[in-house]
Length: 511
Image 1 (cartoon, one colour):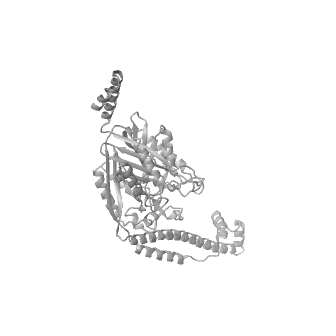
Image 2: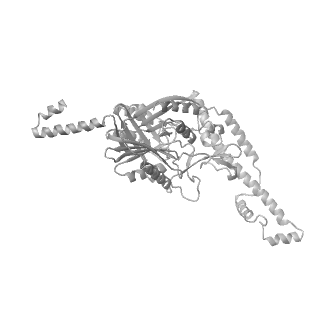
Image 3: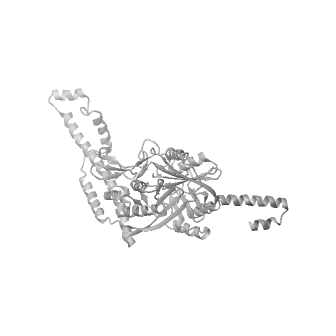
């Protein structure tokens, strides 16, 4: 105030009175906001436009939230992963964090980066674009009110794992065929909850929406073009509906075993837009129930834990033996695809008289001959053997594909020179919104466990965050190693789950 008065002495009285009044108003507003949160948001296009046709843009989005003591950056990237697979290198995360620390003074432990897990192609300079987005968001900080809540969406996804009647589990992938319908006993759970955080400007207009949901965004679009997939369409629906510069940031949840609905449909073009629009509309519906208020709670916990690596040498040997057994079980048949298909149709249309009309069968029987019946018996035996061979070959594709994954990770674990892998786990609280993270593809049961055990009603879980260590299925699912992708495309031993869930429970108590 002394400084304000000193400046006022150098201007005419009337103007100085106005100046002091305005200054007092500004100071009063700042004082009223003391203890509240400020936030800024930005998004930058990261689409690789040289990689082929583009259906819709991919973005990196940044939300910077700040109170008097803490600053956190929430960054979402329309990409399959942060390192290891896809188009983002392993140097991305340390590069971005180092630059943000040097340029903006951001604590690296307070930088949360989540990959949506869409399979779009990002540009080469995705790290630079990420830094640009956070820098812009940091320069746009304004006072905000905060609200948290949840929504519901159960139409757009399905669990891709199912229990088989033989006691094993299989999963639905384009990499191999599904088991026969009669082999399936039950399906796994989904998590229909949408976690919602809203940040509103002081005039009530929404600045940003952060929403968390569990589903692989791998549906694609009819054109086959580059796409942010269903989560990109969901964010667009939210932003278009809210308008006024609102930005929607999607945080991928525990999607390891969750596919888009009707993932194996062959009767319609793959189209993520209807599914994404439904997710966006359900998120908007949830927003109508979330009221924002002044709230200065902003807490970040970041810890590093060691998780045990798997040793699947014995299981690899068992699968190799199973592969050989399946190969040796294949038997010859006089049929090929060209002759099998018409026979299969004929014998399904008429079980009793498939080779000709009924009167001829009756005539042969009256004459004491059974030529057609003998032909039918031979054809039926060949059809059954051909079908058996088909199912066996389908099983071989599953075994071979998952065996390749196991061998890859077994080699990587051996080369690591350590029995454990180091992972970063983050806990974040903004108002009533509580989030915990993991760098791998968590499966839905883990997210459901954490939510159920949390002391906070609005607790959500984000996988694919601050790194990538492949799939992270439950200990129970890891008893199925080699039969489904999630338990085969994994570097972790079953004991990892208890260690992680115990650490998360501890972190949640501190939030």
